[in-house]
Image 1 (tube, rainbow, N blue to C red):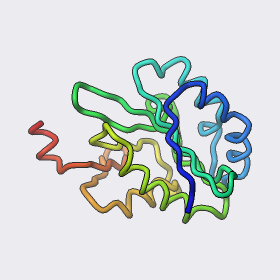
Image 2 (cartoon, helix red, strand yellow; image 1 turned 90 degrees about the horizontal axis):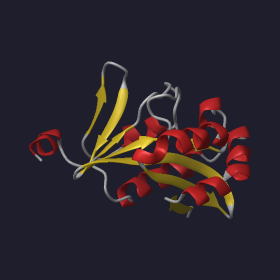
Image 3 (cartoon, helix red, strand yellow; image 1 turned 180 degrees about the vertical axis):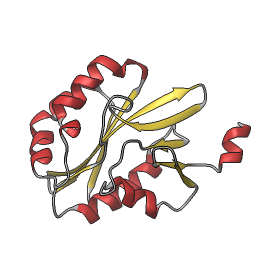
Length: 164
């Protein structure tokens, strides 16, 4: 089984640079907007209003997947977003080629374990994005916002969220 760790400290994010870049080079659909340099710089400049939730997925010590997430809180409402949301195009989960199935399964498990969120708002996904596999497999409320085709995973049904 994959070893999954949720990192919430800037120093942990910083120490990932070499492994992150190796994973980025070995991910079939990686874009420049998923590189450590891009997302770490974004975090340093814009991250102060969010809580870091970078998910690492390892097999035998090898970094095979990375979910660069952050938590935005508005009162009691929490929204998971990709680091870089708003200014970054083509966001996704980074997956080492050949490890897609394991990373998707681990991603599903970890989303259920991360506390404090009611909605995972996964923006700027390309059609071939790995995050679509998690969205399509999610057993629970989910929707796409038609304007930009953003997948949204809900912990509770919309009527409950709106009532809260």
